[in-house]
Length: 449
Image (cartoon, rainbow, N blue to C red):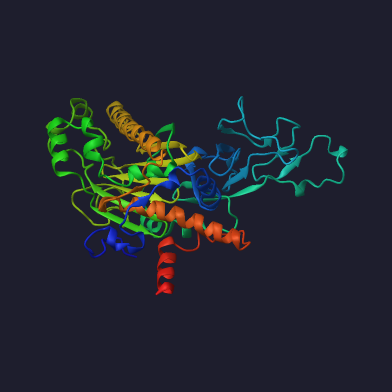
């Protein structure tokens, strides 16, 4: 398994000829019918990241997740039954009432319990989903409780991340995540339990926000005001180019310089950052744990082994971003579509728990600084959505630094195309998780030749 750069072919994009180099059509970000197809072909067929095991660390701990991206009203329960993490549809088998909720049925909740009890008629289920009690059972007609457990949802865990999949025929989580996930094993995720989170509704297609995070072409312009004057002028003059790109099947990654700690020139950062030893790239002082020094990192991180490496961003299709920073912390992003032109953006920041006030403030500064950058990106996305929605122009040229944008839209189209083909052939399974888009494209090209 190799995680080092491929031989140059004149550009990054030319390493993946199936993606092409021409303009990319963005109708997939404004067409309501395409969004409905994506919902069925992608979000009901792939592994979706729900959060960390630390959310439900003990027996009886549970969370609920509302997932309109999978289908209207879709809600699930994720629970620690004392032996494993399980997931179920959040509905009672009696008359379909929502099983777990508090004051407002549409809100996500968390808590601890010994069993789940329906608010409507008090049917009870244990933590494994088995029906254990029916109110006035004698009033029913030969009902067998064993026939009415909670309906399960496939649930698997990778490196402490909980995933679910609504397709019973999908490959295993580990096989789906593939080589990147294999190359990330061993990173000390379990040490980074100090957690900050943001959640916001964005008036833009889900793919547009991923587009913004898989290229740094925009950084010197959009984020110029966040840098000190001298640093901003330097970035504007020379631009910003990443160190490494890679694509493996449905998934991709981008590796970049920057993010090192402390900065070489303290005059280039703001006074508050000098005081707290922190900023956008996170706390400057590395935590005292194993697994984060350059020679300890798993092979998938900093694959080019660059001395100036600062961060890696892994895009696990369809909507999970895992971003590592050189100073020893990480971020996750999730993009949950609610319509063709809207989605919920979730960002979670994870640090090693602080040992003193200074460390805590340095983490809080990193979290606040991140939020400012995210707002800048989100604001631009809504402007983009409004203009491509006019359909005045739909084909847009992409540069070599935007190769992962090509891959994202290419992959999404492949899932939809396979789904439509399967439906036309009367086959309920798209085999979406069984072959990488790039492999299928290569097979198709070979057949055409």
